Image (tube, rainbow over all chains, first blue to last red; front, side, top):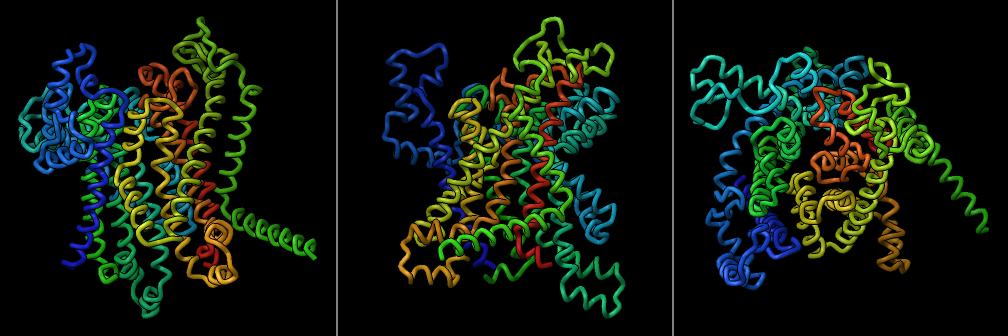
Length: 335
Length: 299
């Protein structure tokens, strides 16, 4: 197992270096002088320009600049935002819990609904439930979630008036952010109604973000169950008179879950892409909205480091998924 | 002699097509999807004939009119008008051109690039393969929409750049798929036979091996087509894709955002158009997979 983990880690090193090259190169291939870009419309004097270039290292050869960049990264220095002047890492860490909270809620909704629906559809293959749920899953899979979010706002916020349109909590409440997770912090604050407000803000964005993973998980669970239920050991279990519930619950489901766990883990990339759209629609102050705002404000250090941090995070989660997969499926480890 | 050989090839091809259609037809959803897709293509091709108005004409006396069945709606604007008085139906009809065009361009670039890269990697193996696949891994490490967004930020917002960005992001999927298929085909005897018979690398790659790797690529191309429509609409929605006043569905949604609580139709119809086309293509993709995947065929 240790060898398996080490080999996976070693495999990550070149990929991570590649990601740093892309993130570094991205700012460098932008047309125009980076110093002028940073100075904005006010412009700079030639002396100040030379001074800034030297300070930021732009007067060095390209390759040296890359190694400087890499060196700073290893020390945890991701640069400063051009707009807020704050370190990018500080901003990232401040906004990160909001995205994690949204993503976790979405993946919990998707798993809690997707897995049972997939299992039921497989058991009742060809029934109206199977057909209805799989058609719905295909619609969910094809859903432009930015539109889906707007529709839900029109119906639940506009027409019924049940949920707020944007933000994480009502402005009426103010309490210290202990964990950064609004659900937990609102509970800790002990203020009346704060938790309810946090839930009502969270519900629509999480449903929107859960839509595509839910569809993928339901479809994957169904096909994994169907495959496993055709296996000899399931037939043997049935033949020796084991109750159907036990055959499905113990023999089939446990084996069918192996690819499903991987699918759930791999949704992290889908969630990050979805978070960009969902957070924009619901003005959710997370990483996705931060990236979009930085792109439109041309805040390149943020875009550069944000890209790097998000890709790094996706890579680590994928590694964890790989390791879990090796843990629950010994055959993978051996190969 | 050669004539009869050609005839038999044609007959085989016809038989394969009949078999394909037989399996494709089994999936009712796929047939519905195909039907809707053909409708979409016809709408795009005959947009100038079908659309009652020009997509760009602004009727100053008809701002934010509801669809004709609602109070205040007018029969000349069947699905209502948008905030600057343009006919929704005409814009939706012209929007079909954008979606199809985007899908075709993105899939073509990603498909040809991916096939070429995957063929080279799978055929030559060794360090060429290692380098190519590492680069593909790096591209795949980024969430696709995020990378496309950043690429567009570098290249500058616009439809062409959005299409290039999406194609770059999709291309590793094709490369990986081609590589895997090539590697399994390379072990087959017919490849060895062709090599012994003196076929060069180019002939082996493109004439001997590639045609036998196409089935999974066709399925992937269909799925990428629908994702391309979806992602380009998302980029349009975020202001990074097609720019106003283009009647691209995602861009139309972006323009409609501020009216969501006042005028439901400006938001509902463009999204419905995106959903319908993406759904139809995905349904078709499911049928194609069933018809082209021999593993599923046997079961």
